[in-house]
Length: 159
Length: 187
Picture (tube, each protein chain N blue to C red):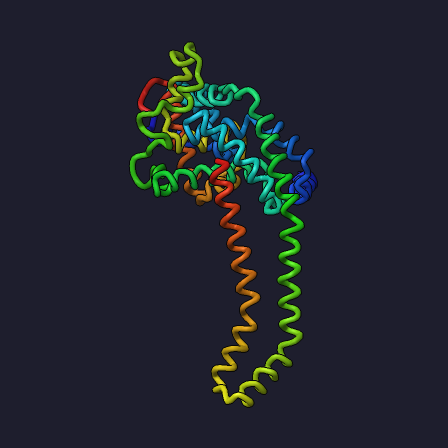
């Protein structure tokens, strides 16, 4: 029998189990396996191998699920306790940004007035205004970053 | 099924404790088995098992219910193992294990017994199961996901964060290795 037929047969045997094959390919394979003892053996070996893999049992460590549930509950409690703090942080950030936006025109005018009154160079008081605007956001970002670093450290220690 | 996964996604978003208990119960065996194949260590598999569920609690809001929950679960577990491997060896797990980039290597250190070896009974070690021990982990991982966990090819690609073609290629080679190992030949 042509070697190509055996190669095709072996490819289809694997393909059938991995991706599936078309009806015509299945018919062709079934006919070939009826005639070719070698390929039929390959198909049988593949079936046996997969059956063994599926049947392989691994004993589960005793109490693992209970220990995990306990840790998960503790962590859930921590997260619940931390939730109001985090929410407060975000509310404060939002209020700070909201107030910043609402008062920006007045503060700009105040900076402008102070600049003219005290003879501060324009660039300098404009930079001052920029800092006034960005500092709350920077503080919020630093706080969130520190919180995340602390959480990561906690996780590492827990592991 | 879509309704189930959506309900699951909503429950995870709420960090529903009952749901988490139920999921731990339901998936404990499958997750532990997968982790054991990846880590080659019972103790590490237990640690990662617990860590995976804590991640599920913390990042439950990221599960959108588009894919099977187990695919997402396995991906979390795999990422934890990869992070640990990177911290340990400062190397990518994929680079360590991708057979397309050279000879396939085991996830485990060479001097450690494989996970299968560790869990098999004395009787099994001398029997047909022992032959599975010789399959490179990178192939065994996809075989487990496909034929034990019965995940689809795209779901496996999602778990591995690898292209579909890589998954298929590993499955074909893995199946060949499995058959070879069962015959007592080279895996």
